[in-house]
Image 1 (cartoon, one colour):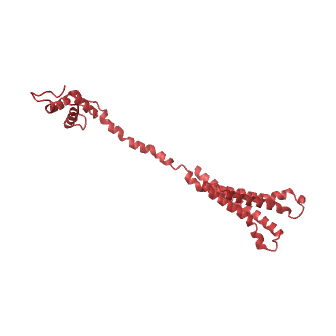
Image 2 (cartoon, helix red, strand yellow):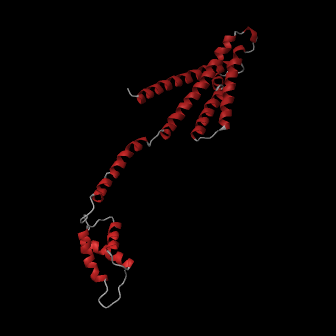
Length: 245
């Protein structure tokens, strides 16, 4: 069993207990308030007696739902808090007050008050926990670190991008000298021709440096071939002044 599976089972079990606790607490509180209403003016009206507790407990449900909505929107709903607090305090107070009724409160055991106060208190807490679980369940997909799989795949993508780089550097890492791959004699001559035109001077050093600036290498023999081609183009004809040193 994986950790996520165990977490789901635990959450489902906790949710079932919370729902059962909420329903049980509300039912005991509601039924007791119905008895109190029957003892104080609604005894002859069964329908009204069973509807009357909703005037308090419904506030709790409505307030909790509004608080859930506010939580999902990441805002604070003061009205929802006030409604929930009013319904909860009123329900607990009336459940406790209904124990003694019109009789002498000093003759009632204190444990009767505890029994009356536990159901509405438990219902309030359980319903709050239930709303919190729903809130977490709704917001969980947005809070999960979704980019984690993407981060795991990034090194592979980066590796595939970097693989061609060593292959591109292979021709440059070969020993210098001789005719580099892809550089023909015409290409070397053109590089030298442009450099000589810019410098307005024809020397082996200028031509060789221009070729090296292009990331190429040239042997002495090949450089001589290039110079032999360029000299007729740039050396002055006999009887004219030289173009440069």
